[in-house]
Image (tube, rainbow, N blue to C red; front, side, top):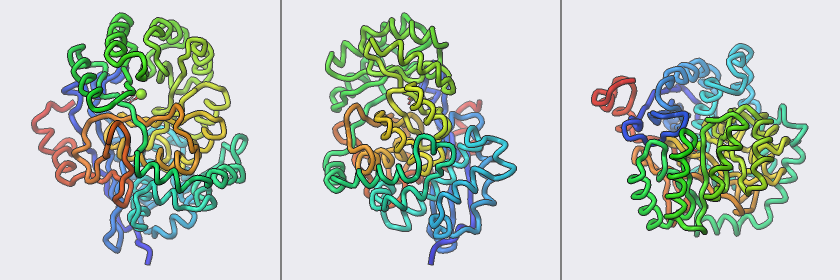
Length: 437
Ligand SMILES: C[C@H](O)[C@@H](O)CC(=O)C(=O)O
Ligand SMILES: [Mg+2]
């Protein structure tokens, strides 16, 4: 008997990370890492857990959006959903009234992500597998049946997607064994949030080097002199052979981005991330073209709201690194579409994970990508941030700067109930201690 979803609950959970400037960047100077946290209850007792990531204020709006959508979910059995997962994705994203709030972007799409993440978690738990393994064991036909190809068939048809997946079956078992043995390569952003002092930067970088990290991302974009000093400091500490990336979080206009990053070229960044508005595809293309001779690529995706945007970024040669996000796109369904398009364009995928729960979720997607789609680790790595993992029932496991594949059934985003209670906004005990914003 397939479990039937009988109740959806959603809570506003916030962590006061801004107190210590964790997660700060040139545009988000005081983020409180937060989540709209969804639990699906079924008649058989099995539960599915999902979330979408926010920065504090406004999480209550995402909670409202999830509540508005629950009528589309309650009463459905898991079997009914996954039998036609594409249809269910469309049901959530194409509701004749609610799609006006997006479509497939903004708060309503974040809510879709939270709900669908919970459905995927439920499915993986039902099958007794971690999500990445559920995906790895699915046939190519089943995988493509989860994807909504509407608006992307000019670049990727269902038949082509199937062909790519069938082709990548070769060597799949060996790659799975390799991942289980060695894990997936990661980079750290935790040493160099914008609000950290130079002293902190040095200490965290020293610790990270000792811990085996070789790839580091530094926040830039607020003040050029500060950026030059901080980037030099990190480059000096990590040496010429380790990898450095920089992230401006959308701070600049196009020409400003080009001149600012040219001034940082001496520290040899592999990429500049989010140099300008996440919606400016042609702007990113111009930046990519201008920075290519300096050997600097453009990375973006954490605020790229759907597969249609990614399609155009790829068509325009506007990015050299695709940064999928497990909570911005419409869950696994839409991420599958983006992974396949990136593969077709031969652009490496380096997922975004700077937030609460994002590392837990996205590790599953990138493991699947390596095992079943890209079959490559060249220029690929998954972001890691060292915050708030202690609030999860199955936190990520990092060994030698690599994500070790989760073994426990589900999508890894169930939070400890005690943490949820304590950090629920505005009445949780944590928020009695900290100033409310
Ligand atoms: C506000 C978030 O911490 C953001 O700075 C994360 C990010 O850009 C990243 O991880 O990359
Ligand atoms: Mg970023």
